[in-house]
Length: 383
Length: 145
Image (cartoon, rainbow over all chains, first blue to last red; front, side, top):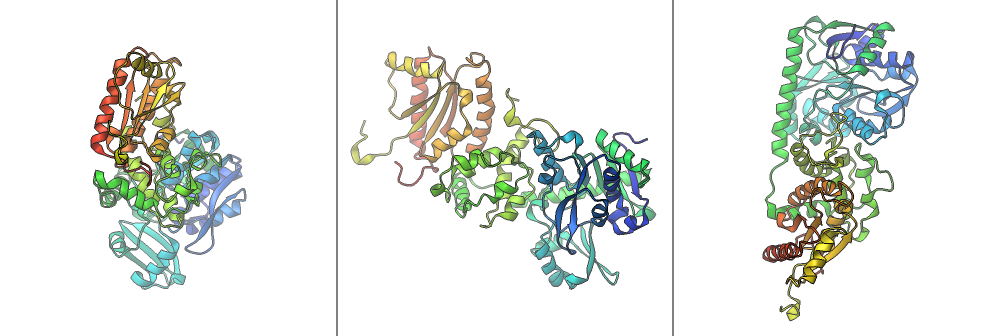
């Protein structure tokens, strides 16, 4: 049977799911099986509204799970907090999974009965900006789009007439479109922190586009896969050497792209000007607290130090709110970009937090949200 | 000293001292009549492990030019391992002070026992000298001298 470390290629046995779901509907089928066979009580999925928008829902209805099939690159929402306090199975980007693991470290999620299916991720995009991009760059009416995909560094859109058009991501980003900034410098593309790491990278030959490459990361992943096989929902076969090599290659290309971006974004600011820089950035803060509210690594709730000890009058320069959050996130920031997305004052919050977090996490050889290892700040003895 | 003259700037230094060792050290420094500058404001805490980064950064935001974190020598903690916890936290605070663009000389960690009055006085003197050269902290709020 399935073992930890196995790399397989699989697809759904249900032809309906297979055609609708991206890459053979493997993930959808596994989620549906987990729900039907009682492995979990609920599943977190995205409910489609249109091609560009979807809302995360927690459901125990298999129909909802099957309806959610298909990939969405234009839903930049972090699912981590939907898993809090429930027995769920959840598909997610690497940053969703990192969020759940950070929540688990803070006792908000029982990781033993939370099943995580990771999806390879090259980045997400803003829905409104994407529609604008379709008109300006692709010359496609946003209403005509039926699907999208990121392949070999190209962003490909499929239209109703079956036509496909791809433009390289580099080109799009130079024109001011493309992925969100935090996705560009993200350094986890294959979700090796999840129970199953799935994606279409490495699916070759006649199966291209109709199957999913899946790596089993741990015992929970074995349970998920075996459960789905026993229920007759999926079929799997071992991945070939060539497939594994290609997946690795795609991953490396994406990672080196990320590195280039992080060099571009994180330019060194001279020591003398740094205080001024941070003060200027934070000067627009209106103390709405949204960045704290959406953060998948925050679990303090309402009685948190950052809101308790800061002076509202001081908020526009550097205040305790910013100080405590900079400190707090320097070992737990996962770089998901949610805080920048919700900031009403357009402060580049994620970039600022990453400036602190990157250095600390590198120094302690610790990457937030990748394993259940305790954050270095909570250690009793110096490492 | 010529302090009163047109309110010339003098460094303000906040020192967090643990009740069992470094606060005793400060006491000994006084009893031994070791000369030390008047720039210091001592805050006594029961253990250096109680010092939250919050306290340190609040001191900076309230106008401190430097902050000293002091405690018992490693292994001598009254609460077994409080000062090891301080050390872990201090590492993070140090990184953050640098990243914020403050000079590393503005934050110090020192282990001082109750009998080391001279060490305490020398430490304060050295830090005051360093900070005087650096000038006021850039995090100082407007209107605070």
